[in-house]
Length: 281
Image (cartoon, rainbow, N blue to C red):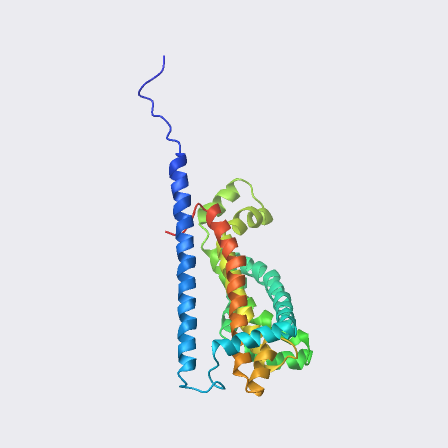
């Protein structure tokens, strides 16, 4: 004999899931359409200003002039070589920052005396602009690739470390107490409790460190480098070729947007999905 008063389980309906998926897809397409319309209007305004002859083409190049410079630099392979050289320096410096900054941030968040000493030093060095490290790097490593990589590391390491440290400090103490009760040792607590709980903050710190590394690289390449996007900017300035300057700036912005969307955007979506989010409300 069955009990008619027993509550029945409410299963998620397939229709509601499909509606939620369709809503998320429609919202993403609307966002993409809005971006396309914005950039098309921006280019139209740019063309309108350049044809109004307010400034000379030497000071304000037209979109056609910039596009021609991009196609020419792609044809003679100078732009791909510059992009690959800059990205190589960026990847080496950024990977070093990750391998040093994430463990340091995890330690600073848990060890009080390390946070009071090295953490305070890191906080103070974060206020130092990354380009200030270039004279010291040249004295230590000479005019070489190591000096550029050193500037990239110092530009991204501090912000990444502090972001990870702040993420560790915001972990609920209940998690740590429960792990101790269940017999977790020191390294198991880091591996199974602290590291997963601070993963969103680690990703935010990695994204912030990437942006600082990219800016530090461009600043260092402007002052000293033979091949790279910064060298292209300086060459355009010396030749009074504003088309090359603006074209290189567009490439720098495009690379930053692509890495932000294709790398960190996908990682953020994966973490949001892991924490129970489907799409932005």
